[in-house]
Amino acid sequence: MHSVEHSGGSKEETAKRNRMRGEKKAAVRTRRLFSRKRKFTAGFLAAVCPGLGHIYLGLYRKGIAFIFTLLLDASALLYFSSIGMQINVPLLILLALVIPVTYFYNVYDVLQSADYVIYYRVGTHGQEERQVSPYRNPFAVERSALFGIMLVAGGALMFLFYQKPRWLRYYMEDYGKITVAAVLIIVGLWAGGREIWLLRKQRGSKSREREKGGV
Image (cartoon, rainbow, N blue to C red; front, side, top):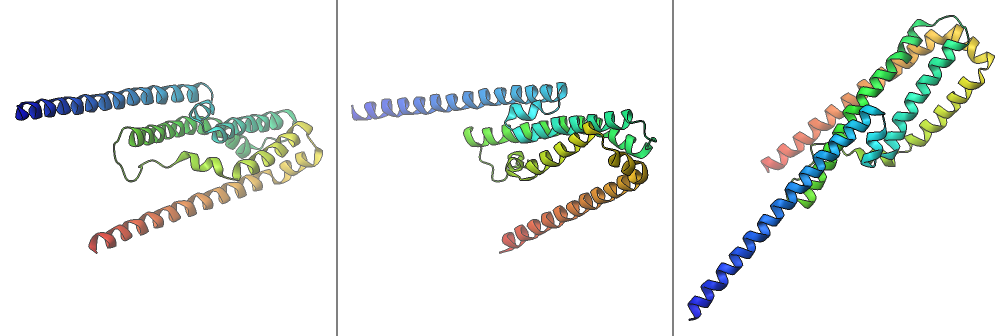
């Protein structure tokens, strides 16, 4: 009699465990489907208007930064085309290239950010244990002070473009090409130094992992 009750109880526990396991798998599938829809929506919004996809994901500062960059670039193009100054070809080419570069990078970045959100949600709530995320945390930029500096500097430039002071016109006519060259050199040095620093950091982390594995 006791053996019959024991076997019946074990069957009920097994069925309960299987039912809970099935509910967890269904929940994970639902979250994955929702995450894919969210990634598609973010990419679609970013393609329609740069910055909207980031705002949809909760990256408000980055989204506003993309929108502000395009507005600033459009203001600069309008300024240099309306004051009748001597055409500065390198500067105009650089300003014209900012628009497509910003647009496509905006789409790429929002898809990467959506992948991080999907990875984090599935890894946390779907009980899929992963130690290190393969995607860089896009929300770390939201706490940076560069956003405020960019708004102040960009707002000052937009104010100058709309006011059209004479000294700015004379400066761009005399030193515009030199300024463009200097800006490109500075950006190139910064990008190269950043890549070297990231490469050394990656090599250092790999060497530490090897040392730990050897120990």
